[in-house]
Image (cartoon, rainbow, N blue to C red):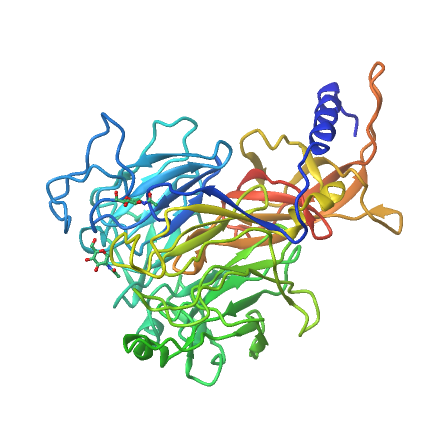
Length: 562
Ligand SMILES: *[C@@H]1O[C@H](CO)[C@@H](O)[C@H](O)[C@H]1NC(C)=O
Ligand SMILES: *[C@@H]1O[C@H](CO)[C@@H](O)[C@H](O)[C@H]1NC(C)=O
């Protein structure tokens, strides 16, 4: 590959920049980004403009963020506490690059809703909630300036059924499926198709628990759906249960809301023929009545891992280093899973847990059974992230955490866990400066530019440098490339999270000096083959990373279409 002069200039700038990173303590670190953004981050989504949309519920009185002068106040006669007008925001747009935020306007109640990113323009589509919000569909664009805000759709672009606690999943055909919600044993699709609004029966939810079921798109196009301690493989196109999986545990341990374990589709291999799900934490069923009596039993320390593509798989049960409820499981660029936030006792709910779980745990799926979990000891002091907290992966490899409000209102005094309006970043140890020489830096396509368009089965070339060079096996430099869908995270489940390793051929870049320019060492070209079908990767926006072993690059945005 012959490289133009601007590549060489870019590389020189990058090499200079990477020498200037301040030293950090080993083992990762916490950073308080904002002590208050004025709104508690119950729900969070990263968009491809590198801004995080976060929101809380709307109808419990003022937040701590007053709208700027001139911004219209929210007037909603359905509001429980301020029907005549509320001049505070209940949603915020946070810019990762500038570490700033601005107030956004939502009108109807967004409490315990679902969401996904729309594949065509990358807007956040968010649906459901409570009371007047229970059938709403709201759209927040990924704009380039600060002029955009939420719009709330009018009929017929609303849900066909009431959905409080629904789960969304992007589908191969570009739609999203919306599953469940309180007393809602059905599913439906967004955008609405022409004709009468339709819901489709899902009796499994009435046999289990329809609150935020764990939903993952399997590589055969069916949905893996887990609730309580049971799971099915479901063909949503025909409404049939394709497979009923074994029950996880002995019947007494529950995993989805309000027992609030978490679930993740483990990173898919290139051209995958198998897929696995990992579900961690939760509580014994008896914890729900115990917390009502002021007793906080230990949460579950077990995880279940299941090869969902097998005809009759068994759960492999593994032990975390400590119990956890209300944890978030976030896949990292290198394929490891961070388990972060939550408590070691109690359940999800107001005033329902007593001990924060402060140490993140990293799970390494490819290691031998018994050596997969590692408790992290990052520098710094994190804040407790109890009920109504959330977490997501940022493009720079950090995990953003926000929210935590185990109270009906914003309560800052006389409570053990004050309402958290802060945002923090957890930097895993791969971001320590001791790893700087190992870190790949993607040069082209430039991480500073917008999403790169790619096609199913198409190829994308990434030019990247690694200061210390890549390891070489059989004469070939070794690196991996992954694409990761940004999640809509709330209530301990990252909706739409998906991590795929891609087929890649890596070679040294053949750089020719231009004029007197010095040719930098250790520059590589990765030729990446995109997933073959939209069943493997639903269309839309993803982050793409290069990994040198465990050490990831910063990501670029891509958009995959037919
Ligand atoms: C939020 O506002 C309340 C009432 O004005 C104030 O007491 C509290 O300190 C504020 N909290 C934060 C974290 O900004
Ligand atoms: C939170 O504050 C509200 C009033 O703002 C109060 O009624 C409620 O009792 C407080 N909750 C707790 C748990 O202290």
